[in-house]
Length: 361
Image 1: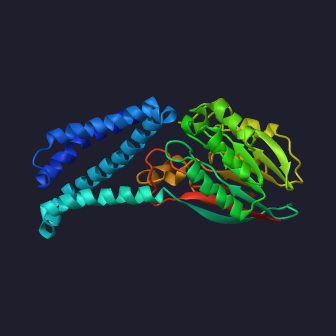
Image 2: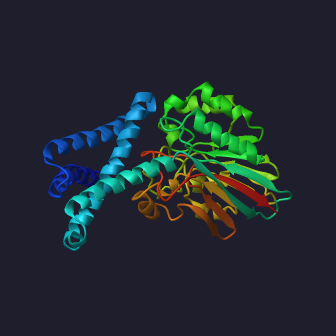
Image 3: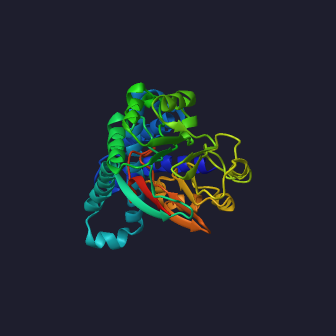
C-alpha cells in the first residue's frame, strides 16, 4: 500500500512541478518535460527493482545519476508545494519568476552539497568503561562501507589508511561491506592485507542480495575473520559476531534474509561471565535480549542515521536507537551512521562515520 502511495506521489510530482514552474514564468510549456521527468523516475524505479547496480558498472552509474535526480525532483516538488501554499504572502515580497528560480536552485544546491558530503568520512571517538577488562583495547568499528557502484578501491584505501593511523587492536567490519558484485574482486579485497590489526567481519543484509559465497570467500582469503553467530576470545574480550538476523519471531523487518533470531541464538553462545563481552550485529535491534545476556557493549550500524531528509525523520519511527550512544542497564549500545551510503549518493545532516572505540577497565 505504501509503495503504491509513493508511486502515485511521484507520478503527480512529474506533472505538477513543470506546470507550477510554467505558472511562475520559468517554462513556456510543461507537458513534454512532465513526460521526461516521468521516464527518469520510472527509470530509477526500474534500475532499483532490476538491481542492475549489482551486476553492471554502467548500471551502477545509471542508478546513481537517477538517484540524485530523484532527490532533486523530490525537493523541487516539496518546495514548489510550500511556495504554492504561501503564494499570496510570498508574492508580495518576491516576484513569481524569482520564486521559480529559487525552487530550482535550492534543491540543486542541496543535491550538490549532499553529493560532496558523501565523498568523505569522519573518524569519531568513543570511550567506554568496561567492567572486568584488565587492559585497554582499541576497536575500529566500520559498518556499511557499501563497496560497489558508489565506492571502490580508492575509498577503501582512504578508510584503511585511517585504520593504520589509529593503530587499533581490533577492526570490525560490521555488515554491508559491499552492495554490488562489481566490487567483489581480488584487486579490491587485497587492500585489507595491509592492516596489521586483527580484522573481523559480520554479515549485513546486503551481503545476501549479492554473490554471498563470493564475498565471504574473498574476505577470508584476504585476512578477514568471519564471525557468523560465533564467539572468539581476543585481547581479554569475548567478541561475538552475529550474522544479520531479526530480534525475535514477533519483530518485523523489511530486510529479513533468514530465519535466525537474536533471542534464540544469543543464549546458545556459551560465555565466561568473568570476561567482558562485545557484540557486533549489523542492525540496532534486540537490545533487550543483549542486556538480558549481560553483554557489556553492542556495536551496530545499518540505519545510516537516515542519510538525508526525509530519511532522517523516518528512521526515528523505524528504529528507537538510530544513531549515537545509548545505555540500557549495564549495556552500552553504539549505532554508527555507517562508513558509506546506499541509494542516493548523498549525505545531508548526516556523515559517513568510522568509529574509534577505546575500551577501558
